[in-house]
Length: 245
Image (cartoon, rainbow, N blue to C red; front, side, top):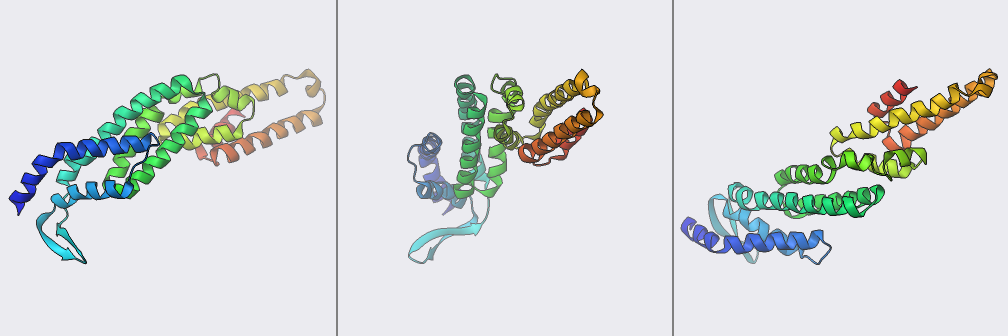
């Protein structure tokens, strides 16, 4: 039985793996892909890897049963899926970063990664999901984060125009790789200081302690709202707000 499985696998593997990758790429590009068929094809690699396996009848079908072993799946499916995603998203991120503004890029990435999670949950083994997303997030977020915050439509514009929804989107996307949050923080600190500096150097306000205090409290309330609505009261952003004040 083992010889039979191995022989069939050697004959069919290249064509099957290639077709699987093509189907995943089509799905990423919004083309039709039969998820159930894809799931069955991928599961066949899991079944072929079973140890002490044999064919048993289950209902009206014959299936492999044995001890779980993912060696074949990891070598031929997981590796191919992850490498394919890395190459594909490296190219896509380059295209998107040059053709979209910052909020558009973030929205596109947010939707792509959500879909990537759905695909992983549906037809990949649970162990693959975290490894796949890590590579996708590296290409789409970590490698582009600094460029994104410095775009004309990036952080400075979002802060100055009080685009709380756009900042919330950036935070949601960047939080997938928390090392990138430092880029938002580096823009938030100077923004608060600039706003406060304008108040404390206003000669008219300095002559009126009540108005001066009211302006500072107004700014504090505004920054509290910013941290709450855009950054979910993340302690790192609370700390940056406090240090800036």
